[in-house]
Length: 365
Image (cartoon, rainbow, N blue to C red; front, side, top):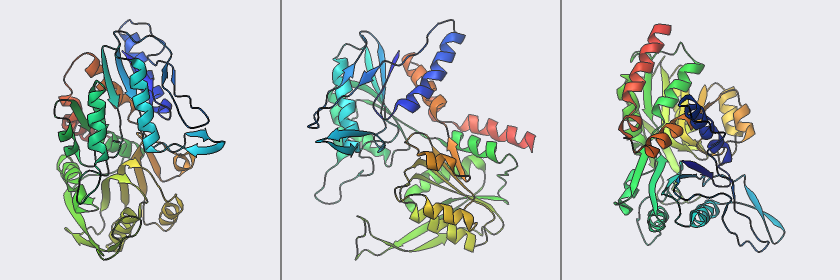
């Protein structure tokens, strides 16, 4: 088993590697690292190539890529250019080519699915994610591991390739309880709220395993205008029981600019919610952190939880309200199971682990 980190995914791959090395040593296998050194050097014209610096013949290769890491730069005609998701996906394909069919099996760990937000065709438009998956299948990739896909039905584009969509529910609850061990998930004290109808499934799962009530906000949009590529939200209508005096968690797949999540938090505070926790798998924060800082100072939000599956800025990690949900051990477990051709069912359905976590939290309370 060997790991390859695409440019921009080195930090997450390093954390995964530490878990795998520790488990290997516990099993009597002396291994310093599973990571293979690689590079994607570029010419000044912008052309590039993938380079894998060790033999991979017969190895089970796991390539980790973060398509959204905008912090990676390269020189283009002497200008510093930030890598886009397209650039990261091209690097992934370059490294698959560099392996050159010699590996026993190639799996791709792509936590944030490339092109995943463009998940359906409405008019004459592209379906980037579906075409990308087909391209990877053609290149010989056997497994795709992703997290909280915007619409997991995109896997229908590659029905013969293994596609696993994992959710960070257990890790989120564990991190939340670690920061606030006195938190009670009793239905009289805690409520799960979906920020819109599209996020209902993941919020229904949260409320089901926690045994608490579920509410939902409905976004009323102005379909006569388009602002930043979307129809602007006119108002948020709430459907559900009273949140007065209760702690509330809002769960979504991503925080982009964060405006809709912050609007929902403000509406919940207006309805006299006690604490408001914002949770998302991917924290992009495309509009910066100033508005989140202001909402925290005004007491409108209490905590924000996102995972390390995408690039996190040092500014974000330094914020007092931010909780970093580490997913490296979970990914390492998935890789270990795949390497041994073991079932992923228990890992992908964490209900038993969540129930055990809740039992332990009740003992501590």
